[in-house]
Length: 506
Image (cartoon, rainbow, N blue to C red):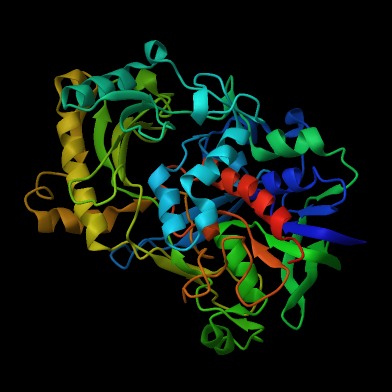
């Protein structure tokens, strides 16, 4: 059978896109994913339903792991985890539901993507959610994704102490972080119900899998895009150890900031010199594929935690959003209190300053023409502007940790020690050796006009220079949004469904 649209990847964007496109009964939609499809909440493994980013509880059946490098100052690799199940990484993440700030999307529009301004994406955000706490012009009340917050009076002590310390430092309390003006102390919205993480397969696919024009195929791995000249005509797929050809009038990659550029490169689309060096056939020279890799960068100010009975401290309760003194863009740094500990390690309190709008950009490259060989992923987290903001954030966290509110909960500081704080130079050296990245990789198939030599797709998701091939996921973000990207990636699926319908066949 030939499909009108074949979507590769059923994560935050792909599942959303498939559900919205298949609302049109005249469109036949195929959704492929290398992970399994669970048609009811009860079928999802317990660790996937309630793990909240605790990857150690998951098995290799439900996750994919990739080695990555933060920078040349660190001798170790960081593991990137992606969900290998329909629902993608929305099925294994921490269930934060924080939107990007309006300045993110207006910045995209200013860079040549006017269909992605804040006013144009706001209706898509509203369509996603049923917000149980806030209404009005900025929130939805009948979307497939339930959103809630822990009320202030029910917060655990560590969150309340963090609130008091930041309040005394002059930061306002603005509980709705998804309000366009929100900064200061905010409540963390989450997409769960009574501890059950609602992923995009649960929210978008399960209620609609009965549609005759929507085909859901799990445990099917796309190996390359098929072309006639410069026109995509289908996908080669491995399922059950056999190779199949899927014919489609339109192919959409929704495999994330690792999977989508990886598949493009293995299909002969990317920097020609890189592909030729590996002995691969070049279908289309597109230098931006795999470049512009972004991630949220953070440092860890760590203390001994003196309340081990808070071992299940819910780090999703409260967050501080502020503008660094070195930034020209508002709301570019966040800090959240985090409890870490296990049976093997003593409990620790972490205060994590996070650069929400990073200047550092890395790359993803192939290491071999062998499809089974993992890519090389380097975040190149060394930009001076990021170091400057993290330096300020670390020093702010030390002030927060020293506040009287934390007496009796924050014990001796573990890191950084006083020698690291002696000068900007010594602190920068410590940050470079210890800088970490969230599981928020983005930007490797950057959206922008054809006049931008680094752009991979236009604002409609169409791959520059090719026909009938699009990308729809976090890889198209010009920079990672100033928030956990899951909500904005689901929005990309919502918004792109409208844009595809407008431009299908054009």
